Length: 457
Ligand code: ARG
Picture: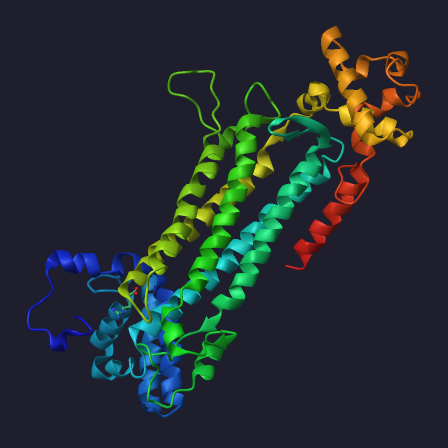
């Protein structure tokens, strides 16, 4: 039964109905819809808008309906959307009294409320998953504060760092994601119910009461805005897109790190796949998918920004498009986070390959220039001289570490005996003790901060 059949003489065209219906996807928020209805109905009873006995009866049946769906005893089918389904089901179970449930409410404020509840639950889920991921990354980083590896700029070896420093960078990114979701949750957790179709209601409802029952932090202050605001969806999708981009970046690293040319990481058998033709292959399919899934998550954000950009006030059916974006992003991102956290527990890093790679590409040249600058030479001049030393090395097939003190001194008298140690990758790392640097004790300090942040979540 349609919720609005009274005005119509002929039924909806079958194709138009299929096009219009949202039940096939919005059934995913049946729990939120029923919870919202229970709170609304309890408020109607408390305010004397419907008799308390009717309110009790409706609420009891709504609870029963929720558990019947949970247990698979009731299928969600045969209605336009989840709101119609719940109401129809209620009428068929307890008769006409159920028709009082929709007093002082519209599907417009109802759907906005349901989606806020769904997004709020989604955020809590994602924050918990991010927390587990950062904690695994931090645990792994603790063991790698002395694992020297190259840091890259322009994807070329730049300066030595450590694997721990690298992993901590991603911890910081994922902690910012937590921040973003948590901040966004404040604006999600505001209740629009009571906005009615667009200009609220004449019934003496108590919105604050309903909001308390649903654990909202507050209520919206303008009914036109209440029913038509989807900023909270866009913000949530933007936070999700940012997290997906972070996941994509770290997995891009792991894709190339797993190649023979790098050999920085060995993929766990449980998280890689083979080739149907090349028997030797072990492919980083999981990492590639973690990179690729960012496409659909970013797509969700772009899709909602586009849907909203031309919409006049107040509710427009275009907004029904919000749900598939939210449901898909929630499902995809939470799966990605779970998979990646398990991957991170099992991945094996090849410390020797990293160490060997860390001195290549003259990545300790900055140490050489810094050595001269520390001994009084203007840095720009030191940079120039070091450039000449690198050219000398290239022409003579030597590394910086193979040069003797005398060879260094032939370029400048400001070199002292300490130069041969200074150009070692390990010492380049150890001397970067400034805040944010890669020295082992400094990264330990960064890890302390990360662990403290995790504890406060
Ligand atoms: N399925 C609709 C949606 O998701 C519910 C609201 C319907 N309201 C309306 N005025 N047609 O937006």
